[in-house]
Picture 1 (cartoon, rainbow, N blue to C red):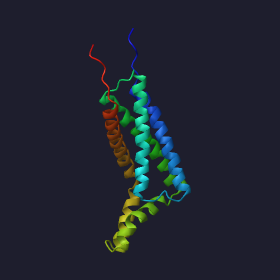
Picture 2: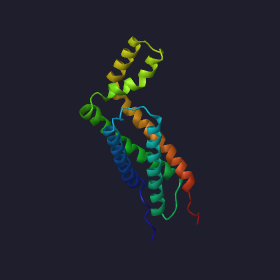
Picture 3: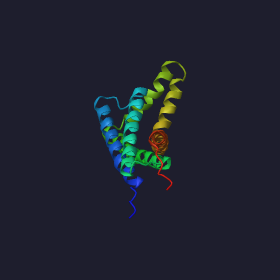
Picture 4: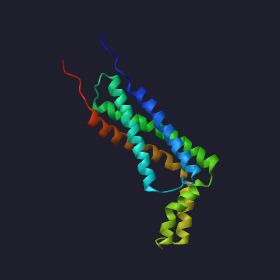
Length: 172
């Protein structure tokens, strides 16, 4: 009797929900500390590190459930799936944040992004106001871009983890 192979989608969903939950908790923590509009690269690194750990754990769990075997394509599927699920949860959180919790968040974020250029004289006040207004007007366009970037990061994390944990089934 042949052993039933575990489904990559199950692991993607479970660990995507875990990563999404952790991301929402991290976002709420940033909000309570009034850092949710920060453009700090350290916060991005922390977010990617959390994603890397959860992706590694998800792929490791799949490998264990699959009799200690893992192909690179399975790792890529799981990494992208985890990132997709977590990205959707993150976007829902961001929609709730900017529509209900802190409607001024887009304005604050654009001030943080464009403020240094204004202070350094790289742009005029008119250019600042115009760019800020256009960015806020088309804020919703960032959501698909966030999702695509999330999936690309998930693919890279899946690739790296897959290369580390890869173990092929014997040919016989």
